[in-house]
Length: 375
Image 1 (tube, rainbow, N blue to C red):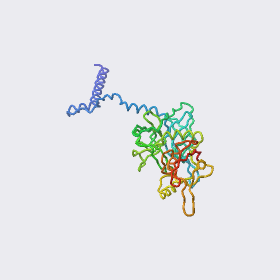
Image 2 (cartoon, rainbow, N blue to C red):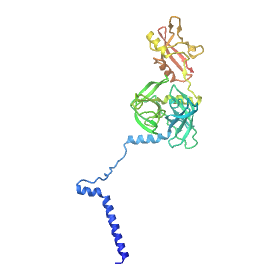
Image 3 (cartoon, rainbow, N blue to C red):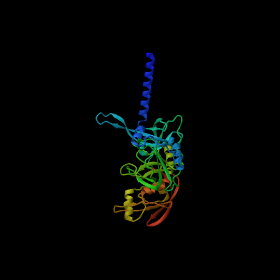
Image 4 (cartoon, rainbow, N blue to C red):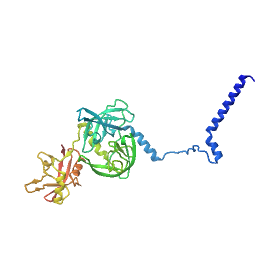
């Protein structure tokens, strides 16, 4: 046999041997199982999933429709080096927000941007814009920012109502907890008309309580109902550890829908007021001494709505404070503190007339008052 043919035959045998070795190597687990009597460790057959449940489909659809309306907010603050006196811009925190309208207004919590020197808003498609502060209401923990979106504007969140919410109905929160962007959590409306004291002493009234997981970074994001409508702004959690413990709070959308247009129009929220002077700490002491539940009017300045209605303030003598009128109800709804009185009035508008039930010399008296702009 010629040398060249012998070389080709050897090459063919070598190639065949290599192929057989490769085949044996790939099937080594199977060969081992033949000798050991154990089954081969191969991937199992995938079981068919079938259709998603109806509630799963509804939740997925809700998230996919709402996601583009939710934004990620980062803030920075200016700090001064005490040695060099140089000013630096440093990261301050993160939060959430949502698109309010087609003009580029973004709604979030006041505490998300409080103390910040600048803020940026990141959209769901990755675009990022510097944000300008339009207005804020610390009393409601609401702030409005504005971004310049030239094209492909994200859709605003559909607006719902909160006065007709029921404990037990589903609630969905979308936000950016711990910087983990566009996170969905679900739960129910756990309670209504809660009050929460902020660190700055402000008491926020009419809050929605939910067990949908809310963590740091969720603040300012939307709380939605099962129709994908806004029912509140996620604002705080109740937790000794600072993480979710199943008790979260949201500012109700009826408040949001009343406050936000004023912030856009005026840059601030103008409270409806009576024009009286009151004090929470002093009111607690006086009502305890008098054995009544209500709000003691300390002073009625001239020219106010309260003065026009004939309300009477307390008389201060060297020996004591002699109470005048004590407000015990607004439009038939009882009030037990200054915070409750302000919350009752906050449900109305400047120019509305409310009926106050007052105690004057121990006797009940109904007095109508037309609300004036607060300061």
